[in-house]
Amino acid sequence: MSESIERVPMPYSGYPRHTAPRRDPRAREKRIERMRILWEHRRTLFLAFILGGLFSALVAFLLPKSYEATTKLMPPEQSSSGGAILAALTARGSGGSSMLGGLAGDLLGVKGSGAVFVEILSSRTVADKLIEQFQLAKDYGTDKIEYTRKQLEHHTRILEDRKSGVITLTVTDKHPEQAAAMAQAYVAELDRLVVLLSTSSARRERIFLEERLKTVKADLDNAAREFSDFASKNTAIDIPAQGRAMVEAAAVLQGQLIAAEAQASGLEKIYTSNNIRVQAMNARIAELRSQLQKLGGGGSTPDEIKNDNSLYPSIRKLPVLGVTYADLYRRTKIEETVFELLTQQYELSKVQEAKEIPSVKILDTAVVPTVKVSPHRVAITEIGAILITIATGWWILFRKRWNEIDRNDPGRILAEQMATTVADTARRLAPVPAAVRNAVARVRARREYDDVSRKAREKSDAAGLPHTSP
Image (cartoon, rainbow, N blue to C red; front, side):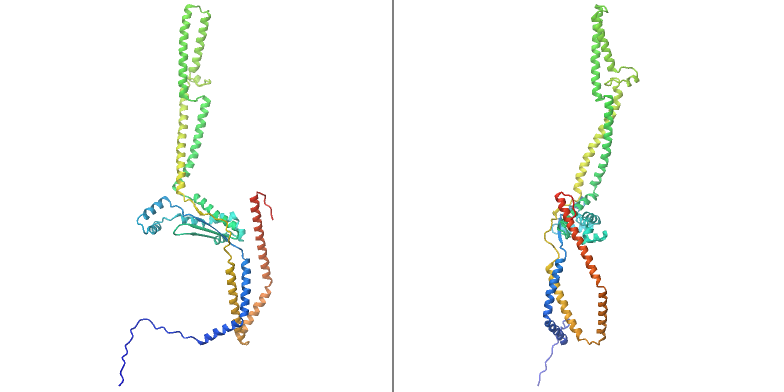
């Protein structure tokens, strides 16, 4: 009596069962056949590897060398308004302050000056300046400014580190000295444009004060010139001091005149009018009256006072000159005060502008590179040898397959006809490669001549000698 076995169904896992893929024996035989054919032609493949490596090495050595010059710029300081906002927002919290500050800057539209620096360095204005300064159209072999800009953009790499904010500028050129000079020229042009394009309030105030100072300086010069001409013409050095001195001198003369008249009156009572002492005293009195009259103005009418041409202004003329003198003096002092105040404000605005303008701070200055960055000759040689070996292997397999095809096969007949047509066309175009090679040779010779001429000019400039063509 056989016992029945109860089969318990397995729980459904929900995943399909994986079965081993079936291998096609024909595909395996084809692979083995191909490997056998390649093994039979191993000498040919080895020779192709050697010749491919030599050819690739020759190409690698013919390629021009390239050098990289790199300069690094410190992140510019934030402006006062944007920096204050970001500082206030990032001050709250300790763990994610930088993330909060970056998010707040993006939401409020407050961007750092680093991105502005990158855009300025990538601008068309900077590119055209460098193209003109280094004559890059000749070096790149371009005849249009747009193509030259594209080549310069291809040879320049500008990166900004998001964490540190450091801007890295790398210039690639076939001449190491020119690569370093171009990197330094980028920084110099950036500094010039940052100052030129600054739109800060301190800059606008400084420009306004510059224009205002020019006007005030012209007014001050005119006032000083008029005051000087008036003082020189009327001998009006200091009207208040001159008036005080002349009044004191007139008082002294008046006192001497009174004393002389009293003495003369006493002498006339004692002696006759013909006495020598009486005549001498009368002469002294006449002279004192004459001096007192000159000091007083000499005339009694306004015209006589105005037409008085004495060396120093008289007492009666001082009030007339005092009004003009005071007006010119006051005008000159006002212009001097305004000029001094504007000068102080101008200096303060220059200091404030220097604080607000983002300064270009160089972390690493570009130096002349001594090691090339391209071409990578070893890699080019290895890759070329491998590719030529693979191509040779494919050609061996194709030729084996081609020989197995029946000669009467329509596809083979069509392929032979196409090959014959291509060969005939190539024979007719045989002179074209020679012409191309000649043109390339002429261009290369011209570039070598330009390089030699440039080096000769550099040596002449360094030695202070006139330029001579090689």
